[in-house]
Length: 533
Image 1 (tube, one colour):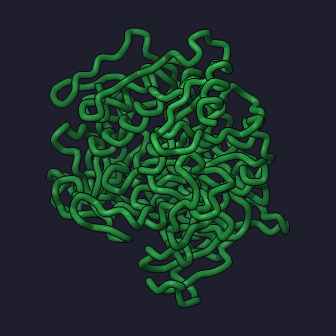
Image 2 (cartoon, one colour; image 1 turned 120 degrees about the vertical axis):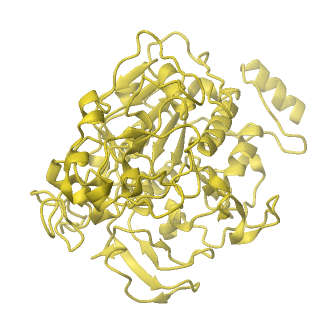
């Protein structure tokens, strides 16, 4: 049987990678048609970086330390930190910032470990100061750790360049970068993750207090949920790894739409597999790795990063392992995991000759780029390793990889975001106390305005890596996190989520592609995970 399958595949021009002991890969028959040549989308969803924090001086690097970076002569410019903003920044001149008022400054290659900044829904709006962008140290700056390098709350103005975030700059050189992409709404990680998969942070139908599973039903603080909208970092209701306030959301997400079309997909998050034992002996929900700067350990799995766990239809609250062979991960046959896997499972399924149509990847926490416990070099290690594996697989020829982020961490960015959706709650602060924007909020399916979703929020990095990505290209099209689900909906014909989801407002990613190019499947960029070169 296997020999017959291999012979048929060879006749069809298919190159198979089969792990010993596994059944032959299972393919859709026939695969659903796509609107573009992209048959596989991989979203590497990282943590807490503003655009200026990584790309503010792109493509000019200081080249005083770290990995050497020299840009191609024809590299287009980005909307970065202009010379005047580097030397005469309004944050440095604002008395409200006190003694920590400072111009933007370069963090060296030896300063990758930094303090986590304030990136809550209201404080981020206050940092914008009604569009003046001059209150970052006062409102979101945090120097309350051993790694502020003498800047105090002014640390929030720090940025890296291509000598440290070398891989990111090299991907931008060879593929496409968007410098006009924003957090869908203001706020921290949970809203960013939820916006990635549904564009809808409203619709909370259950809340619970404390770490118990199941949680004790009851209200949670307004800075976690305001009205029925997630604005903070509550955890998924009933997740066995939950340790504090928990919520459940109603309504469809992109997983539901993919299921309805019979398409394979998966959320692959570090630490999700509770049966694995880490090298340091940790297991279960306590699996961990050493933090950046040798400060201690950080658990690999962070519940509020697991977007699909917030919805009953796409959750796996007990972290059950798959009940199928690895070459069927992501398919409807796997009723055990319900599309929720470990990041290690992504590499395993790729090695088995299988790749779901849509894959979302979350690094284990120590490699996700989040200040305080991760850093750019640990992040680079993970991102490059995953991309190298995809590029050397048979799927690369029709794959698009997106590197995107859940929020800005509060790091300085000089661009005022467009307010495409307004809100008026106790947590809103942009246009005055209790107000963000002057319009009418998007309405849910019942025609009721949904508050607590003011956006767009801060500007974030956004990279597209694909044989079909434009090369050394900077896209200025307005996009946000929900532009990713907008692309999935259009490419696989799922229809819109609707009901007030941002997917209906989201800008298109198509300007970052060139589907006419002749180098189909042949453009690869193999980087060193340690250096980014």
